[in-house]
Length: 414
Image (cartoon, rainbow, N blue to C red; front, side):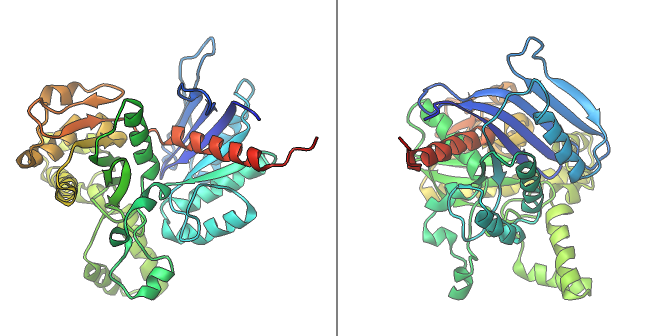
């Protein structure tokens, strides 16, 4: 059996593709070793940036270059050429983050023709993410046809949610079709739990606020998910960068009627509205960049100020609601691009929770650096932690486990 694998991990966002190569050894207590860390960002804007860091090379400083990427096809081709280039580590498997597997796939999977067929059918569940991930999977499988390819799903971690948290108040035949609350950002949450477990006993009652372009809040007991603000798709829950979050269903019907378009065109227009042209960007009238919106708010622009108030209030409400659901909180964890790097947003979310005994240390919050940081005051009844999301590392670990399990199942020929 191969003790150590080198695994390429591909994690795509709405305008970026992250890629990493990890050396993973499940029999080694040390963390998987990052061999390559790269990102192609700004896809579709004409000013995309390719950043690549090949670790442990004589010239190991990250390299950045501007590349003319105007569409996803060009982006995928650029990443493929980058990971295939001379001097890059050789990898034995490829793992992908897939947001929504649909109702049939309930665990991380090696990608077979049958799995691909199920993923194609499930793309309608996450139209913002899954179609481009599938396009990437097809391209990478074509370039590396002899390697095993694996899909890791953002929903698997949330399968511990109880029935009362996953069931919609609709006639039962809809549940039979797969209409239920799935929960998302599971790989991020799983990585948080793993990091806290490696430090000792994780908090018993905890919420994790994953705050980035997409945002969700998860309630956990003993490291297991019991609820998540996202539901049937990643569009629901708290307010996000370009996504509306939860809306009155009657409002969606009103929007459909207001468009006065044929049903197929109307549904497509509403889908675009709720996923791409709503949220903080719509409220502020600015591009989806919280740093720029925060600067505009500090300069007194009322739309930017209101956008941030609505955004942070929705997250505060979710954390407060889970606090009551769990009978109190031992820890609040903030992660994701905003959660890890934006102290003003963290303060705006947490200050309103002081009535629940949540007390932020302003100095710690302002100076929080990389790694796991505690930013709660000594008087706080609840620990407040900033913890980096490690989705790619979790994918690498899952891929290695699946590959080793397959190796153990394969009969040996003597």
